[in-house]
Amino acid sequence: MEIKLSKWIIKGFCVLSLSCMIAIPCSANSLAVNHTFQTFNQSMWGSGSASVFSYGGFYGLSWNKSGGVDALGCGFFGDCYGAEFNAYTSGKIGVNVGFEVNSGSVSADVPALINLSLPDAVSPYSGQTTFVANAIAGYGAGLLTTTSPGVSAYADLVFKILAGATGELCFVDCATFGGNIVNLNKTAELIAFNRNNDGELRLLGNTLGLPASGDIGGYIDYTVSLPSISTTGLGFPPIVSNGTSGFIDLNANVVNIAASALGIPPLSGSVGPINYNLLSAGIGLDIGLYQDFSLMPNVHIRLDVAETGQTIFFNPGTSSPVINVPYNVTSLHITPTYSMDGLFSNDTGFDLSPYVYASGGYFGMSGIGSVGPLFNQTYNLGNLPISVYDTSFSLGGFDSFTGSTLVVDVVPEPGSLVLLGSGLAAIVAANLRKRKNRKGSCEIL
Image (cartoon, one colour):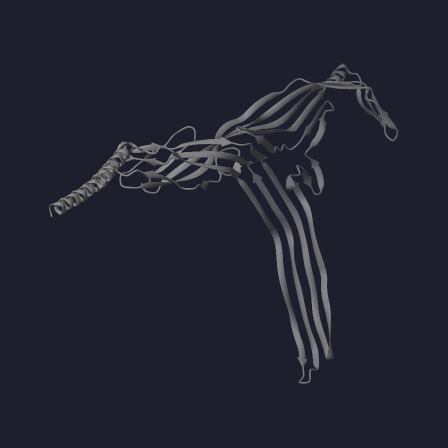
């Protein structure tokens, strides 16, 4: 019975050794990560951060002075005689100036689900000296926002004066006196352009326009505004956002131009306190600024292999990196780092919108009221976009992070396992022969 059992042990070692020569585990390591990549304050005109230049300073006279006299003396019993006097003055008279130029900025939040998979184990001894990593990235609904380029400037007149005096007069008992004699703190705006992004132009407190409107010769009306476009877009990639801002509106009263050419009174206008519009008709043109943006995000993965020092960069879904398997290790520790950039597109230009209009039947008198207009129609003739800047570039500035380390086992050399099994089998066989020999000796005795 012992001999039969030992034979089965020997066979088992042999089968184990042979199985190690051909069996390579094929299950996979998998790692799923969900992360929202973010970038802030990137330029909308090219790769890199948005440019913001600001300055502020004071030009003028400033001072801070004080001084005094001390003629006060006190006796042994605490009685004091004399006086103490101090004067002070400080101030600032001049101009505070400042300005800021902002090139326009882009920010984005992009959620991504990334699945990375590696084999559980590999064996270089069966010819598997390399293996590949696979990854897939999916994107959720992202947020794209832009802030309009802007320019602002101001100059303020500063008039600040503080002056005063304090003192103490003693004749046995003491009395104090004094305080501020002059305390002025005035600031007046001299000039301001788009201060605090208000879109206005002011001079000595008077608003000059923006929007500014008027007429040329009584025939062509105009309105001019300061354009400002800030956009927001939410959706799945490509994420888009867009906006428009009108800044020039021109219209020509063709009826009044014709009346002037024919030498007849204008059909719209005013006579004394009476305003009238028998017929106004003409053509107009709205000129606006438009900006269309889009962002197509792209996840990148870097794999760092601790045992070999190998570093691999690849994009999920577009490439499968090859990782080396050395003979002298028992496992590979592979650490992924995830990052993102994106293809950003900016199409900026003018939007021309011509129109025709007609109105009439209006009469009004100051202090009494008005009637009409009896008709007022405007017909848009379409839109004509004229692109002046259309480009795409890589949008960066996104955060990155390091994921959990994955371990890939390296299967030991099959030949070594066979030798190990054979050696154990030989030891068992030798022990069996010794026992058999001993048993035979006992039977002879």
